[in-house]
Length: 488
Ligand SMILES: *Cc1c(COP(=O)(O)O)cnc(C)c1O
Image (cartoon, rainbow, N blue to C red; front, top):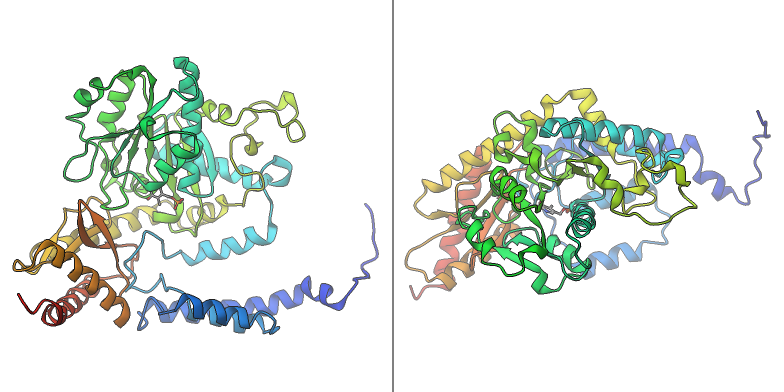
């Protein structure tokens, strides 16, 4: 034991203050009180979800105060005021979760510890917890004990990691050069998939788009003919499927795709960033039937598993595949005999200093149990279905399609308006809604039409909020039609 006199000679009082544990407690208590009041207010529905902030003005106001030496609590208050309120039940916009507050508390612990997890010695607990989380997830998905993977920062990076693995393994198996391989993707896959493929050096000819059905799902009926009509099929290495497409929340037919891929020796990667969480729900897990036959898959915890951004699982049906992804020499980190040691996670991830990201989910699961996640999925998926039904029964609205998940696309409809006018009308409706508050909804362009888009992320959002939204939209629509399209 080395004993060092605690009277450290800081070069300044300031430096001493920055590490003072008492000050941490003081500000910490203030912050918790502030956030408690915030949660109570916001969850009851404040008057607007999205504060209207001009980007230039917001930038200037934060810039002008940078040298103020303000109290942290005052800075925190300003931040809350100018932020979008995701816990507000009127928030039904993007696929971002209203964080379970316990996950946010856990993050404070992760941040203070700052145990970067590239190598075991630096992140022992994070490494152990990561394995536990991945194993329980793999089991929930239906994979055998042979499966395994890593956690990484986001679905985009997860897709890149899995597709790098797919290329490494498939090019070696099929004896292909790096510029020969091609991949089959769907028109409705997330935009990051083509970005990832371009990052990997693909040109447009190497990315082949498969036919989809009216729901935006890979059309499994047409796939065999389509596939066999492609020249030089032997250079195709993988199929990328989506469980929960971004525009419409649809699920590709994974079971059939897995059988097809298996018969053609194609790697099946499933991007289940949004919709994979249904594996926790007995009611909805059928949506990803066959996912345990995929070679790789990604699932975001920050979409439907109640934790803050970013945490993504990349799981391989055969866990040893993960070790080939980044095979290179990095002797200063890993000694040779340590090959394939699961606990040096940096061997299988892009990240070197990785955030202790598994804890958020681990603590939620260990405290509340698995039931929390199944209850959440059941509630938000079922509410979205009921909401879609209400839209479908309404004469002035058009439902794009029956939702498979918690994403609903619809638009205000009047049969005396042209398609262009309907597009314009629905964009104006959204702008008006955001201006008036309290609702926050988004929009998407799908098959050349504009749709209002809602993701039912919040368990506090009730059908009464939905009825209020429909009312607001109807009023806004009448006003806009009278003002803008009075020729009709
Ligand atoms: C959200 C999403 C992504 C991107 O994930 P990030 O975590 O935002 O990087 C990719 N694919 C799908 C299907 C998604 O829903």
